[in-house]
Image 1 (cartoon, rainbow, N blue to C red):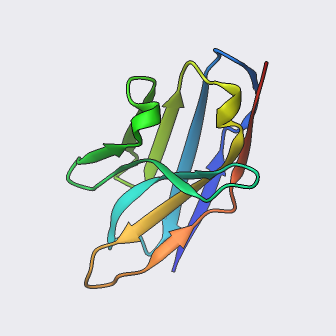
Image 2 (image 1 turned 30 degrees about the horizontal axis):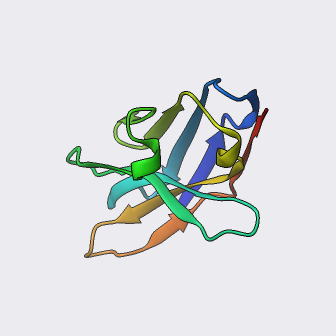
Amino acid sequence: QVQIVESGGGLVEAGGSLMLSCAASGDTSAINVMGWYRQAPGKQRELVADISRSGWIKYADSVKGRFTISRGGAQNTVNLQMNSLGPEETAVYYCYVQEFDYRGHTYWGQGTQVIVSL
């Protein structure tokens, strides 16, 4: 089992920045990908960014050039630096981890609220 703890959400003005952090604990030996999804009110959950153990990174087109994902802490933490935030990015942000195929589980955090005000 893997436990996930997220931090860093909150209220920010449009154009501002926030950094989200996520730490995985427990049996982390099989973790490959760590990343973030978000879900805005009335919308589907969407991928924001993720990063594999080997360093491959994916970003949603809408955040490229503004968000930066990074991993640390013996590969068990992931940070998402978010700059130039817009009101449309108000959402609950969820950290997730995906294990390598031989284990195959996906774990989700509880979510952290980000509110971007005008």
